[in-house]
Image 1 (cartoon, rainbow, N blue to C red):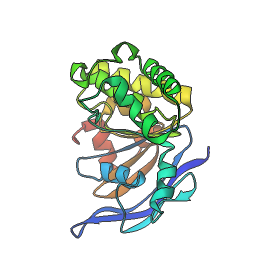
Image 2: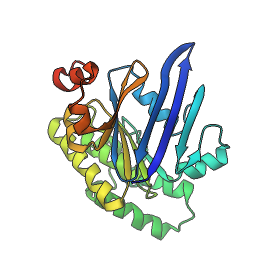
Image 3: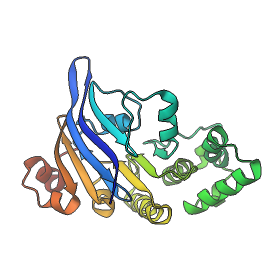
Image 4: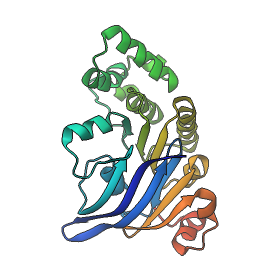
Amino acid sequence: MENIIEVKDLITEYDGRRILDGITLDIKENEVFIILGGSGCGKTTLLKHIIGLLIPVSGSIKIFDNEIVGMEEENLDNILMKCGVLFQNGALLNSLSVRDNVAIPLEQHSNLDRELINRIIETKLNLVELAHAMYLSPAELSGGMKKRAALARAIALDPQILFCDEPSAGLDPITSKAIDDLLLQLKRQLNMTIVVVTHELASIHRIADRIVFLDQGKALFVGTLKEALASDVKEIQDFFTVGRFE
């Protein structure tokens, strides 16, 4: 499989404190790639760099073989149009219905007519099994339904890459498994690459193809889940066997 994202020697600092220290990894087409590690290790910071929300001190980030560090905003926007983001808390607008939340990227980033937008919204909500809640407000949804609504919005523009920040955080085990199953289904149906930040052990075992394990800003391991489970790196052993990380 071809690399769809490449990160090389990435360094970032906050107030003189190094948060990411020489991160190098690649993410391949049509895989589920997990960013994991203990609290404060830099998982979400790495994700924000990859989607262009943060600028590193140094290093390279390539998406679709395009260097995005230092890229002009207009060109970066064109790259990010091929990406979707599922935020940790869903980030749904409470003043809008589920339908209108899903419509946002279509209305802002396409020139499609209203009839086609409506058909796309219905299709995406069917994909996440939420068509029946189209006209409900976010306040009327359960935690799992909010995640599904946010997921429908994230895939509205048929992204090639889907980024997910803690997709099963705060969900009960049954709902968490349902979200994981849905992500795998969407990967198959839409031929997407999915990049997930998580520390949920059950989810990692269900969905991971490959992982990067971060500790104190460094990438201690990049490889398959099977290789990670067989690793003799103490921090990885602790994560998977003791579960002492949050």
